[in-house]
Each structure stands twice: as C-alpha cells, then as structure tokens.
Length: 93
Image (tube, rainbow, N blue to C red; front, top):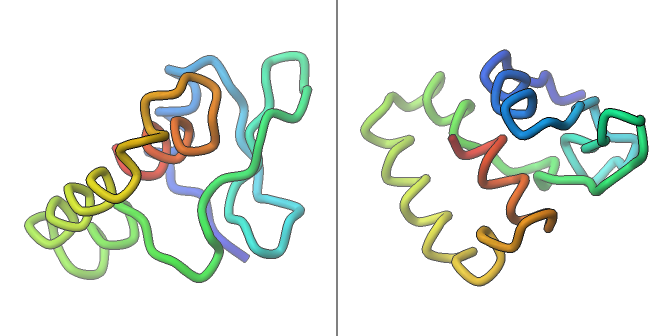
C-alpha cells in the first residue's frame, strides 16, 4: 500500500480537499471534497512521484523528474478539478 507523505497532506489542505489511500488498486490517492464527495483518483500505483524521488534520489534528481512530468502533462495540469491538476499540486509539489 502507498504511504501518503506529510507533504501531500499539507498540499491537499491548501487546496481544500481531503486525501485517502486509493480504493482503486491502480492508483495511489483518492481525492474528496470537505463533504466527503469523491472527486478523483490520482497517481499511478507503480510509478514514483516527487516525494519518492526526493527521498530515494535527492533533490536535484527529483526536481528534474518534476520538470519532465510537467512537460509531459502540460495539457491537463492547469485544468482546475482534473486528476492532472490534483496530481501536480499534491504529488509533484
């Protein structure tokens, strides 16, 4: 099971959402509004994210992976409410 980092909880709070480990075995995190309504699932389970890279490979490597992630997902990371938006703000900040 994916362990949600403290940073992810902090970022989710800034966005006004709650996060929990995903019930979808292919995803890491489920996003809920403050009324506990499901919004979306984010983060492919088998893939790393910024916090994982930061812990395992260091800041320089993690920052490069973040840059590449944002290039790959540039079409959806700015669409408010989309899974890409939440993944960018929670898993890659």
